[in-house]
Length: 116
Image (cartoon, rainbow, N blue to C red; front, side, top):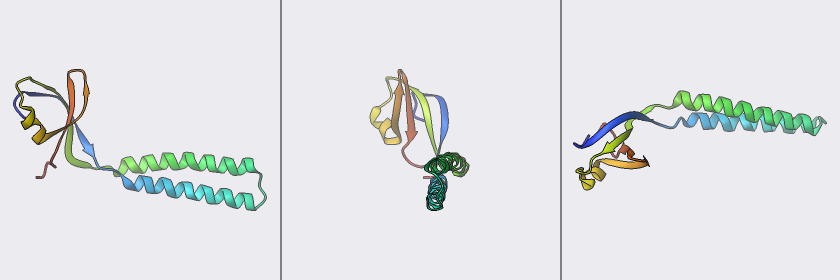
């Protein structure tokens, strides 16, 4: 960290758990196919709608669980920091990216992966 930057907290940046999105899409498609089958078998529209709604709920829950289970740390961190006035902004922008700001607290992240 550059001299003059006070770190208040750090949080790892996680990679996307893309498998969760795939699971969510597959679960939704299964529920849609089940609803189509029910309509073709002369079930009423309310039953088919209920199957789709239940499928959406199951898809969202299972997709979220799988997404969170497959997220892995990238080696980069987000920091909440306080930056002194004497910090060179040119030097700051070489190493960090400004993500957000909350009053005097800045949220920044590393520009380059930690392995480099």
